Every structure is written in structure tokens, then in C-alpha cells.
Length: 468
Image 1 (cartoon, rainbow, N blue to C red):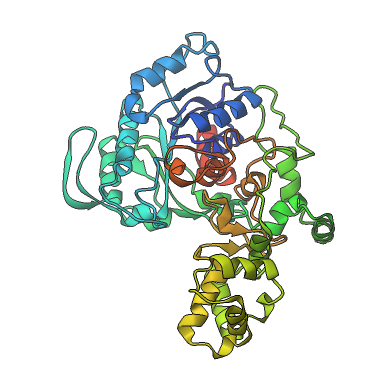
Image 2 (cartoon, rainbow, N blue to C red):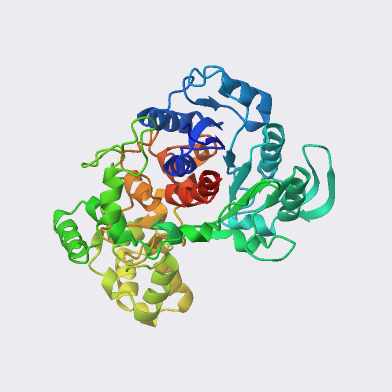
């Protein structure tokens, strides 16, 4: 029997697609507008036996240029179907870019990216799948749009909640949104899922909207697929520690506690090759393991962070307890004296200030501590005993709990629950104005839907399809 058919729009590097495939769907169409993620996405799909033009169709294109007819024609023309495709799609998955909704930075209700979900709904209206999944950030819940015009020209006057627009638009299309209560109106706050509850070693919250045709059986409660145990950072990446002494010590403790399963699954692989139904084994991790070079003063600065501390936490501690632990860090102090912008003082004056730190004025103490730690308040040393914080796109936001360094792409991919056989292609990182134009490996990882979260979402639909 052929597998249920799925479409993945705004697919990125393929986090959602990994979960869709792990749940047993056949992805027959996908798109993203970034050439960089296209390299990663297509390479992965070829690994898994999905070949563009044969049994799947991928296109690098903005969704506003795609029509339902083009998508269905592209699927129908696949050699795999031999002109026997009936035009029916089981599920469309998609996560319209969320920067305009995100609470992590400046939000603009008129950000053009906010309107991409309109294009997503347009495609849904043209293809009419049985089920629809829309993933987005929690900031979606309190975002309002000013004078929104839907794809069918219905106008929403004034500031209207995006959630109200979505509920009305899905209803017009003949879909109900899966609810987790008995109220008539959807309580969208009940649709927030935390990835750590589904086997992902990361506390990442996302809004997951699952809609279904009103004549069909509703999907299962996604919460049914929660795991009893939360995977922590050590259980996810201990084998990727570069210092052999630290690595062996941490792995030995995991072995004694019988908590090596996540690492073993990552190496063995969770996503199966579509025809052979076997996984891609990666006993040795060679891909995406390159580490950034850190100057000695950076290494010493990282060493000031204790397990789980942010820059703000370290500042508070140093201001309260003094900076005795900084005295031996000669490279860091030399850097601060030369480039810390502490005014035109001599080396002798600087040393005297350090020696009498607790007696300085509060403003001067804060100037010195800020120079020692830099202004990057969001930086954090992850706590190895709990799931990671939300992985974002900037690698220097996180310090390893085991070593005084930032993470490799592979370590961050592990924290997102990607298999080790999943290879991220393109530039490793980029900076400055290029961040608006390029999608390097770190960004591909940070923007992805965690595969194990996506799997739970997809299973909630797959199980209903199979039971029917």
C-alpha cells in the first residue's frame, strides 16, 4: 500500500520533513525560496531515496509564485505515479517565516513576512488537503494585523488578532481547528507545544495549529505522543566533547545511568530510507563538527560563566562578590585594558582599580564588569543537567557546559534532534549585513522545526488515517 501523501511548504533545511518521514508519510512536494537550504534539503532527500522529478518534487521558489495547479501538476507528472495520481493530498505542512511574529526581537505588525500565512492559506484553498498543519512562534498568539485582506479579498478592519483571522479563514475553507477543550472558540494558548516533552533535548515552544476537513475524523491529541522523560544536554552531546578526558568521564556516567539512548539513536538514525525502510547508520560523526577559533581572551571570558549562567547572571555575581577570579586571566585583562573603553587611564591605574574593585563607585564597577564580559547579555552557558534553551541562529549565543567554547553545527543539530547522517551544506556561518541575505548552516539548524516534535505532530494525523 502506498504511503499517505504530504506536502511541506516553507520546508527550510528539512526539520519538519524529517518528522513527516519518520511518521510514515511520503513527501511528494516541497518548497523554500533559499538556494542555501535547497542544497541541504535535496542532498538529504537523495540520501533517503527521494529523487527530484522521480518520486518527489522540490522547487526553490517564493510561495507567492506557486499555485495549487502547478503543485498538483508537478506531482502528477512524477514518474513514480505513472500518471495515476488522483489529485488527493492527505496533509499540507508549513511554517510561514515567523520573524514578524517573534517576541525575540523588534516586532512590526506591518512586516511583509506576516502576510506569508495568507499565501499558505491560498495554496490550501487550491489543493484542499484532508489535513493542514501550521507551525509558528508563540508570538503569533498576540500579534495583530492592521487592515488585513485575505487571499479571497475579505477585509479585516482595524487591528485584528492573527488567531481570529486564522480561525475564520479555516472555517471558510471547510476546516475545523483541532481543539483541546470543549469550548466553541479555539483556545490557541492550548496549542503551544514544548519540544522537550516530545524527546527533543531543548525547551523550544511553538504554536502548532492542526486543521481537518469537517467531514473527517479529527486528529489525535498531540499530547498523546509526549515522552515520560526529558533528555538533557549531557545526554544529547556528551560524545561530541573534544577534550578526551572530559568526554570519557561524562560518557562513563551516562553509561552507568543507562542514559546513552539518545546518542545511540542519533548515530543509528531515526529517519528511514523510503524504499528499503532502513536507517542511515553514522557510528562515527564526521560531518558539521568544525569548531570556531577562539582567542585566548575569549576562552578566559567564557570560563567565567558557571553552569546555566547568562551574561546578566555573571555580571550580578561579579558586582556582588568581586572580581578575584578575573585576576589570573591575563589575556582577558590585557584585552580589557586595550579595548575596554574605560577611559584614558594608565596600566598602573587600571591595576589599582582592579585591586580596589569593591571600593570603587558602583558606576565604575559596572563599567569594568561590562568590559570584562562584553555587552552580549543573551549569551549563556547551557546547563548540562536539563534540556537546552531554545536554539537560535547565532552560534556565539551559547557556551558549552563542558568546555570554554561555542558549539559546532553538529552539536546544535543534536539539540534539535537531527540524525547524525543529516548533513548541513553551504557556508558554516556568516555575519553583518550578509545575515539578511544568506542562510548558513547555523541558521538552517536554528530555524528548523525539531524533527522529533514534527514526528509527534505527523503521527497524530497518521494514526487517524491508518485507523480509517
